Amino acid sequence: MHRNRILAALPQDELNRMLPAMQRVDLPLKQVLIDPNRPIRNVYFPEEGVVSIVGLMRDGAAVETATVGNDGMVGMPVFLGTDRMAAQAFVQVSGWGWRMDADAFRAELALGGVLGRRLALYTQALMTLMWQNSACNRLHAAEQRCARWLLLTADRVGGPTMDLTHFFLSQMLGVRRATVTEIAGGLQERGLIEYSRGRITIVDRPGLEALSCECYGVILSEFDRLLGGGTIPSPLDTVDVSEGGLSTAGEGAPAEPKFATRRAEAAGG
Image (cartoon, rainbow, N blue to C red; front, side, top):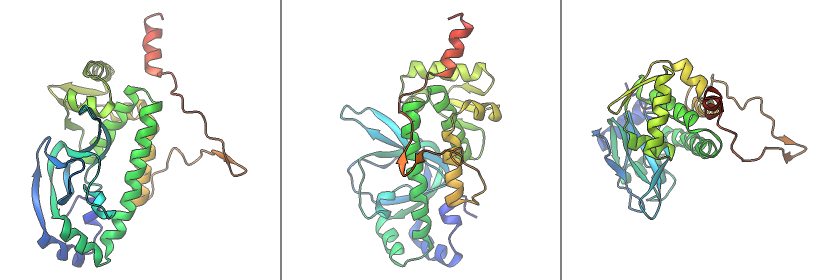
């Protein structure tokens, strides 16, 4: 039985047709699956682990823009009809999955089976993750963003423990490693996580969910609506941001970080 949501949703005859073109592969930490502006030779369906997609700058700096776990596929540009992307995809949490030659994947899509329809739904789910990440990185405090990311990663690895270094957390949050140390230390002081030698364990999931911004719920709900049972409500269900056909959405200035405010109050600031 496949844990990967795309493969698990395929009819058995379609899956049997694909299997000869697929190879089970390990996904070791930091392995590059796609390099920027290079032809994509293979697509990947992770069963375990998490793959990070990072946006890059000319000086080599990188910030994570999306992640792929057992909910999706790495190599979506091939599905969308192109052969490369201006980003890098590499393994952030080790695991394993299925590798499929890009040409064999294209041939399978041309047969018009369920695979293409499932990947179309996944495309919207991935877009939701990316635009919610963009808004979250602009509007929410680093502690909230970290909580959201840890929850999403735990969902994908299927457990509360994950191996994550300061370097990866820095890429994920778009902050310096010193800031990562402060954030992780704060979460540990509150009894939400245990963090030692690059390994994080969530010990108080309800507390971490309370700390996280609404973006976790938005992403979780949309993935469930498109790829699951559609039973998880979204924090946006009751939000009304239009009137008379015109947008009433608010300004894009970030709110004051509430946890920084609490620290200041505790210090008598």
